[in-house]
Amino acid sequence: MKRQTSVRIDNGFYKSSKEVFDALGLSLGDAVNLFLAAVSIEKKIPFELAIPSGDIKKRIENIENNINTETYKTADDLFKDLDIDI
Image (tube, rainbow, N blue to C red; front, side, top):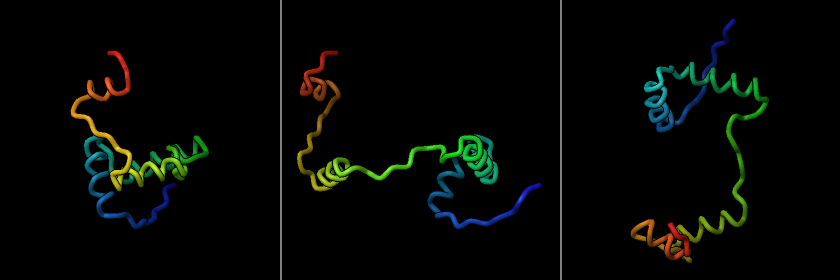
């Protein structure tokens, strides 16, 4: 037996995820059923949910305010600054 339900979905998420589902040959209903099957089988949300730690929040704040940030033109420059030999 199948149950019909309705959900409110952010339009931007709907459009961008629909492109992925289309590429995979899935409908939105198929994708929702896959998600619900994973929850049912694994008895958890099938991806990590976390609240950012204080350290991560501070790093995000620093990046947003360009504090203690460094940019590099190439990966080699970054590796050299980190003293990593490649």
